[in-house]
Amino acid sequence: MLWSISPLGEAKVGIPYGMANGANIYLVFVACFLANVLVFPLMFFFLENINKYLLKMRFYKKSALFVAQRAKKGSGDKIKKYGFWGLIFFVMLPIPGTGVYAGSIASYIFKIERQKAFVANTIGIFISSVIIWVATLFTMQGIA
Image (tube, rainbow, N blue to C red):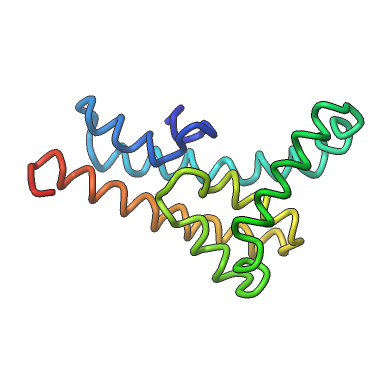
């Protein structure tokens, strides 16, 4: 679960880690998925309440602007154009740099309604988690 809440891996790392260490494969899926979903409200709380105070610090502001520019450049056109569906697609990609952290930041930057953004991020996390879970299961069984 800790890997799934971490920005260093999210459920993309938590699921294979739990399964490789002998945990119940169904419990791993549910626990990692729910932990990853928990990131969205935490990120939005941070972005709406704490971010504005930290932006007064030069180093943080430079870092935040860099992350915001990368989010706009990497996925901005798709999310802006397709909105809800673009956000789902972006979050569901099981590759580094996508996921609920980036999806939350993109939702905030593009001012997507919070409830719609939560649903889109949750659907994206679920699809990504299923892909990772199935790929890990097949790999462990020697099928992939």
